[in-house]
Length: 241
Ligand SMILES: [Zn+2]
Image 1 (cartoon, rainbow, N blue to C red):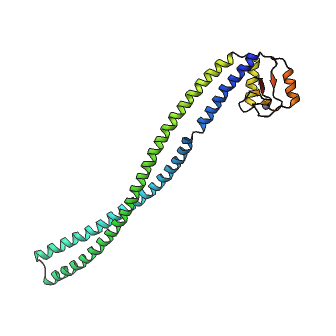
Image 2 (tube, helix red, strand yellow; image 1 turned 60 degrees about the horizontal axis):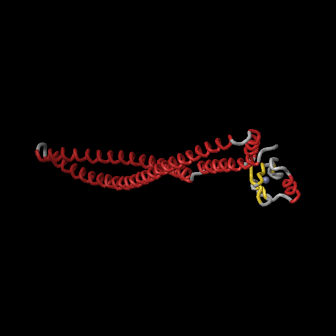
């Protein structure tokens, strides 16, 4: 293929734009914040599960406490009833004696039930404490997640702007190159990791970084300026500079 020296050199600036676009795209899909965001989201899910389990314990202990309070209340009601009966002095001496005896039993029962209630309250306090810590951890993680999301959004939009700008520039740049040469470049670029054209500099192809052998260098030197040269190793367009 033939192409003017000028068009061949323009390929190098087109390649520079394309390499820049590739680099920006790589940055975009490899933002460190995205990885951190994945980690933090997974952590939040785990913490959320744990929170649910503690809330379950909390519900259970609240019910247990309520039952225990009811038990105490029930005994208290009976104590008040018996005390009223004794104060009124109605009934036979035997009945009054029985009530007196029942009152003693009820007081003993009440103090046992209060001990049970106290023990439940101690357990509830421990659960409340764990609930508080868990909620505070979740709050911290959620805040960190929101910060990361904001950072990802800012960086992504900056990179996307740079990609758009570089794409506009490369689209302008390719217009100045002959269609055949541009098509060849595009075809090679697609099949060769994004690099379609490279400099031949100091006897070396800057596309594959291999040094050309002396025979090949002599052959290329003998070719007219408008002859499009390809690297024997990587097949890319070699631009003589
Ligand atoms: Zn090469």
